[in-house]
Amino acid sequence: MAQNGILVVVSGFSGAGKGTLVRKLMEKYDNYSLSVSMTTRDKREGETDGEHYFFVDHKKFEQTIANDGLLEYASYCGNYYGTPREYVEKQISEGKDVILEIEVQGALQIKKKFPNTLLLFVTPPSGDELINRLRARNTESEEDILRRIQRADEEVEWIQKYDFLVINDKLDECVDNLHNIIMSAHNAPIRQQELIEKIKKELDQISKGE
Image 1 (cartoon, rainbow, N blue to C red):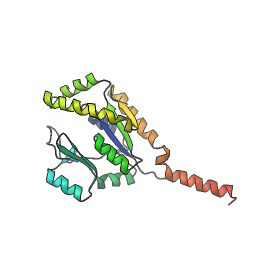
Image 2 (tube, helix red, strand yellow):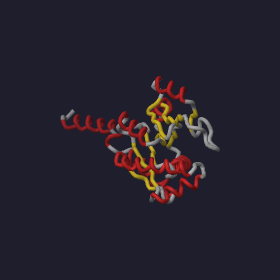
Image 3 (cartoon, rainbow, N blue to C red):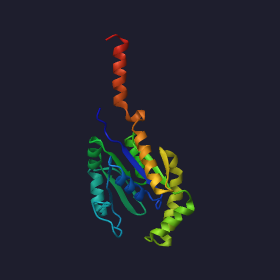
Image 4 (cartoon, rainbow, N blue to C red):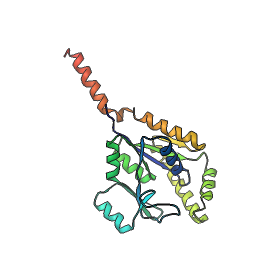
């Protein structure tokens, strides 16, 4: 029986390494498709429009919202982030597991609309390590880093809403762990309703002597 893919949301603290983790997952395994988010934030050095994000202005983003072109959207540190709908739905129907790397607000929006979404939260092994990783990026001022730590302190309260916590300590081990979680999630009853109904129908027929 051909199976649809599943929607996998990967969230985590800024600086937890979720971007690197997702990239390594995509490189090692071929059953994934990465959804490219839309954002109003400025491009960072080395980023490409359409590959890392779709970079748009606030007017274009709000037009997309009005046209129901996003699965979810949220505001984070003064900018919009959102998930284009069409690409995600097409990949899932073709059997790909679609990875969305989005923040907590957007993740919970999607879970509410699509209950069989798999929510994964990425964290380093400690708060001190999180600060070290933010500083090592050399992309933000100390003021910006403090703002991201304050945001992380708020996000801790939402971790219980997620299906799994993924501790990003040793990268290669974490990639394999992430893959195994997703593969196992395919067999959760909520994602196997078609198979369950098929078995139920067959058993009903057998029990009635048909």
